[in-house]
Image (tube, rainbow, N blue to C red):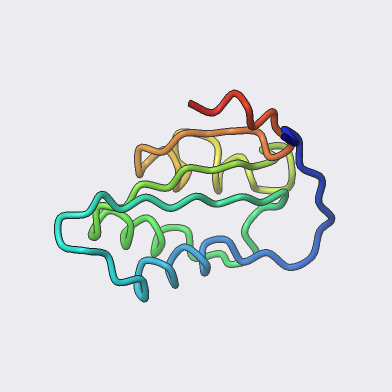
Length: 102
């Protein structure tokens, strides 16, 4: 089993991806709504508050596996104002180790 991930950059609209998933995924009634975002960059989509509002309105938890030191990744996905924190999600380092996830 591989416990580390390597990746190379590009345009990564993380907030847009989260909004799209929340708006288009058909969750079963009463289901626990959980998304996992894995990225090594900050969000190239600047609509953070719109994303937070959508997560809160739909009771969605976002766990993140992120490189917190890249650009605005810390405030996008890692710190207490991030989409992860306000949704109650867990934070993991994007490069692992993934074998430590419960």
